[in-house]
Image 1 (tube, rainbow, N blue to C red):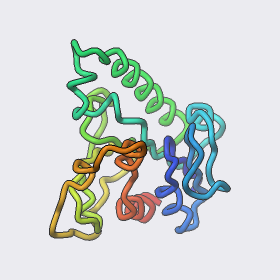
Image 2 (cartoon, rainbow, N blue to C red; image 1 turned 45 degrees about the vertical axis):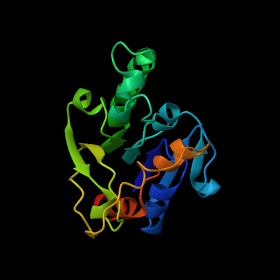
Image 3 (cartoon, rainbow, N blue to C red; image 1 turned 30 degrees about the horizontal axis):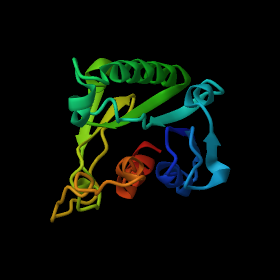
Image 4 (cartoon, helix red, strand yellow; image 1 turned 30 degrees about the vertical axis):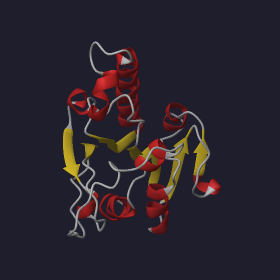
Length: 189
């Protein structure tokens, strides 16, 4: 399959698809922490429109969209306009991806974007895919089945929520867990 993983600089999802023989590429404005040969640094909208894809998996920035940011981005709050712009950008991204791929997934934590997408949303946690962590994650799905949990883990902990402040905190909190990436590649590939 020809797979695009949009807004992914970690390379984790792309690597999972590559490992299973798919022609997968990540795309982000940032350089990759994965393999440079499989990364397109640039505007994801342009890359989506550059060709037809079999599958597009999107990881749009969640800072302004996440419900956990309501105290800064909620209605009447000082950064609410940034949320409105993020919603508009993400909706455009979703619609563009559906024009250029038969199958599309959009990943985000609990956020304001899901009710606006008018599609099926699956809720999952890393502990369902081999990681002992709690991190409620939503997948908006277009022509894709829900992911089936692969390895239920006991001893669940909200590690992401407890991360200490740092320069890389936002980036580190947004990384897709390997078990979830592997399930995407195995089940959607």
